[in-house]
Structures are given as structure tokens and as C-alpha cells.
Image 1 (spheres, rainbow over the protein chains, first blue to last red):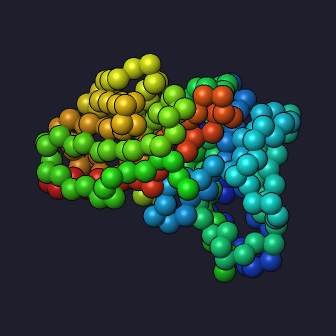
Image 2 (tube, chains in turn purple, red; image 1 turned 135 degrees about the horizontal axis):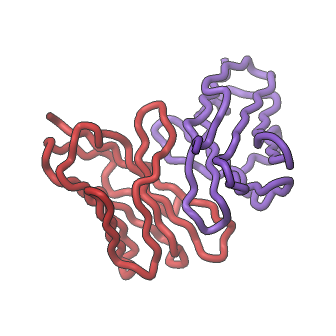
Image 3 (cartoon, each protein chain N blue to C red; image 1 turned 90 degrees about the vertical axis):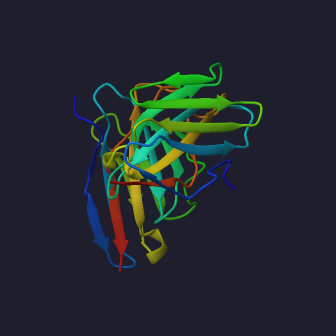
Length: 113
Length: 113
């Protein structure tokens, strides 16, 4: 059973460009979470999604950031008009349902130059 | 601010010794706690979890202790090995919430041979 798959693993974007991060949850998992981690920091919750629904986006910046988890295909975290402060590791996690252990992917490292 | 924190940012032990990593949480409504291990450049790896109706839970070489009175969580690693060197995070989840986890900043464990 493959784990949570994220791609790309590393992404470099110039300021003002768009970044798209993809996450395929573990097989059988319908709940997806996105977290952001700055260097030497813990993970900060961004958004919680189920198929075609955003359940909790309280950790998402109000502008430039969006997330989706379509009926078919991976979950996408989209960052528009990136700035240097967006440079971080973005982790996706999944669980089979709420109130269960969540499992993390290996992360996508975004560098904005 | 963060409701989960750690007493010590770094911990250095000798190979074969036991390690104890501590965590304090402030939300008395939290009812589920997880310890994750994160190696450099990788995603958080689930180690062990505990629910608030328990005081202690044991895994392979690891034990988690929960003291709800003082809102304290600890991870004990027996016979620490060089492969245990990593950053350890505790995370909490609150009943009635949206299943999101709140992470502390982490403790960096270094095991000296």
C-alpha cells in the first residue's frame, strides 16, 4: 500500500509565479490535510478537505492560496503570485476518516527566488 | 499562539541510554495526542498515539505517558539508537474540532555513538 504521494518534491519559483503542489492520499483515504513547515518550526495546519469539499480552511492565508480535492485525481494546493515568505515545506497528510491517525507524505519544498 | 510546546529544543543522549522527550499542551479539551518523528528532508513519521482516556501506552521501544492534570505528555525511547536521531513533535487534536492537529515546535534528539 503506497503512502501519501506528493509532487513535486522540490519546486523553485520566481516571485510572482504560481506554484501547484499535488497530493495523492493513501489508498482508501478520503480525508486530506495540508500543513506548512518553516525552517526550525513545527507544522502549521492550513486546510482540511474531503472529496469535493473544504471542511476547514482556517489556516489558509486569505489571499493567493487555494486548495481543492476533486472527485477524481489528487488534491492540489495552489499558491498564486508567490512571494519569498511562501518558501517552506508543504506537507500533505491523509486519513481514512476523521478522528483517525493521519499519515504524512514526504513533502514538497518550495523555494521562491 | 501554539497550544502545544516542548520544554527543551534539543536533547543529546548516548547510544543505549533511554531518552525522554517532553511536551506541554494548554488546551484541556484536547483528547487525542500523537508523537511524530521527522528526519531531515522527510515528512513526519507516526510513532505512537494516545487518547485522553489513557495514561500510558507502549509500543516497540517507545512509551507515551499522558498526565492530564498538568497537561503534560512525554515520549520515552528505550535503548536509544543512532537511527533515532531526528526531530520529535507532539501534536494534539481537540474533540469536536475539525480533526486538525496542532503541533509543537519539536525537540531535536541527537544520539551519540
